[in-house]
Length: 234
Ligand SMILES: Cc1cc2nc3c(=O)[nH]c(=O)nc-3n(C[C@H](O)[C@H](O)[C@H](O)COP(=O)(O)O)c2cc1C
Image 1: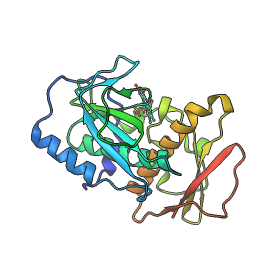
Image 2 (image 1 turned 135 degrees about the horizontal axis):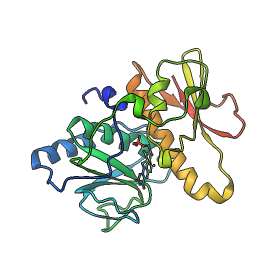
Image 3 (image 1 turned 180 degrees about the horizontal axis):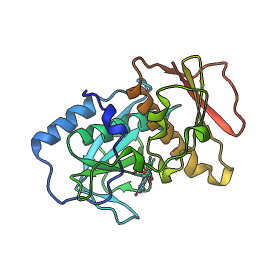
C-alpha cells in the first residue's frame, strides 16, 4: 500500500459528489485494496461490498458506497473502523472523497451471511477534496491525552461520528493505552458502537504514524475514571 500518512493531515468528509462514474480501472484498484486491507484483529471475518445505493435518512448522495459486514466477536467495531479508514485514506490517494455513514442501511441483501455494520459513501468530489491542517475542528491534545507521544497528532485528527472524539490516549514510555468514553445506558446503543468504530479509526491513524505497531488488550492496565480501556499500542 502507498504511504497514506499525508492524507491524515488534509482529509475531510466529502458530502457533495460529482455524478461522474468511476472507471473500471479505478474500481479494479479499489477492489484490490479491499482484498489487501490490514485488519486490527485478523481472526474476525469481514466482508466488503460496493453498492450504488443505500437507504440514508440524510440527503447525502454519492455514486458509490462501501458496505461493510462483520462477524460479531469481541473488537469487531474497532476492527471495522480500522479497516474502513484505510479505504477512506486510500480513496484520497486516487483523488476520490468519502464520508462515513453511521445511519445508512444497505438497500439490497449482501453476498454474505455476516451482519451489516456500517457504510461509507465515495466518489469524485464536487467540493475541495483536501483542507489545511489548521482547518480541522478537533479537541486539543490536552483534552484527549496525557503524556507525550509524537504519533498522537495523527490520532487527534481522526474523524469520528458527530465529531465526538470520545477517545483518550495515555502515553507512558513509548506505549499508548487507548480508552473510549463510558456513556450513560440510554445512549449506549448508539454510542458504544460509534465510539468503538471511532477508536478503530484513531488506531489506524496511529498505525500509519508508527514505524512499528502492535495492539493488544493487556491484562493489567491503568484504569481511567469514566473511560473504557480498549487496548494498548506498542
Ligand atoms: C462512525 C462515523 C459515522 C458517521 N456518520 C455520518 C453520517 O451519518 N453523516 C455524515 O454526514 N457524516 C457522518 N460522519 C462524519 C463525521 O461527522 C465527520 O467525520 C466529523 O464531523 C469530522 O469531520 P471531518 O471528517 O471532515 O474531519 C461519520 C463519521 C464516523 C467516524
